[in-house]
Length: 125
Image 1 (cartoon, rainbow, N blue to C red):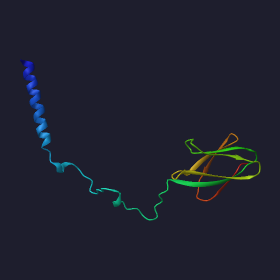
Image 2 (image 1 turned 180 degrees about the vertical axis):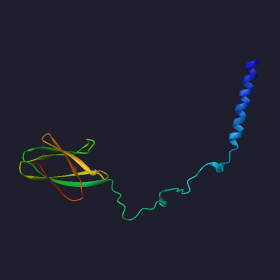
Image 3 (image 1 turned 90 degrees about the vertical axis):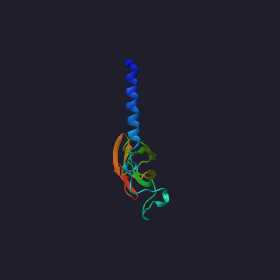
Image 4 (image 1 turned 30 degrees about the vertical axis):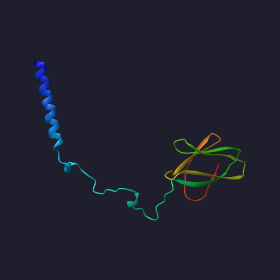
């Protein structure tokens, strides 16, 4: 008999809390004052660059013939090229637009190069 009374009390408590929680006003929910239903409401300046990648070109001049590897600071390979002794070789590659530096590996040596918008020159000495 005691278990039956306990279950009835628990059931009554549950139903009471359910009734009170359903009586909450809908106004109490915080809303964002700026609501947009679709992309047509998006306002973007005419000078905004929509491109997600940037093309870079680097001219290399090396003292020996070997491979040069260009990678992101995290190690993702962007480009591999063959350099010749005392000849200028130009390599072009795309990077994510946010990337400002690349790593260059040549003959076991690692270098860091800051990217800019112009054609760059890199001499191995």
